[in-house]
Image 1: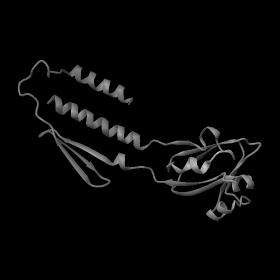
Image 2 (image 1 turned 180 degrees about the vertical axis):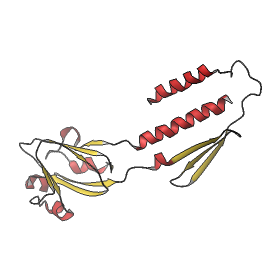
Image 3 (image 1 turned 90 degrees about the vertical axis):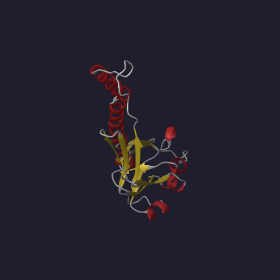
Amino acid sequence: MVARVLLFVAAVMVVFTAATVAGVQVHHVVGGDRGWDPSTDVASWSSNRVFRVGDKIWFTYSSAQESLVELRSEEDFTSCDVTNPIKMYTDGLNTISLEGEGIRYFASGNTESCKNGLKMPVKIQPKEQKVAQNVVSMDVADGNVVSMDVADGNVVSMDVADGPTLPSTSTNLNGLSYLLAIGLSICLLGL
């Protein structure tokens, strides 16, 4: 019985943790320590990044020397035509929320810097949902735990051994011990 209760508590914590992890947004500082600068290899920096809906990208640059534009099309991006941008940023520190899927095109407002590589397409992918779609259930009557991954339909079943039939001092937990175990688990997980 104790094993079943602890397994149930663990399953509940896994579900809450998975729901919390799925909603995490990432803040990307473009160019890392060097920021949005002509000497930064922005293409290399962005090549291994995954941008998702809900993330934020931060551009830091010297407003006296640079600016940032968001361009309308891939053609404007490729040719560095910065004359008709969707938006121009000139503050030196700009945060842009990635609110929808698709590709957004960012480039230096200085045509020469753009032509020298200070430009970056941002392919925005959907939020990662797979972690939040795991469903864990427990059948207390027969001690089975069933985990079903809704995303790809895999069902995993795990049998839990029955505890000892006669209570012993090593497995006898009272209500206060359960509360202590749950409280410690919550503290360790930071919930």
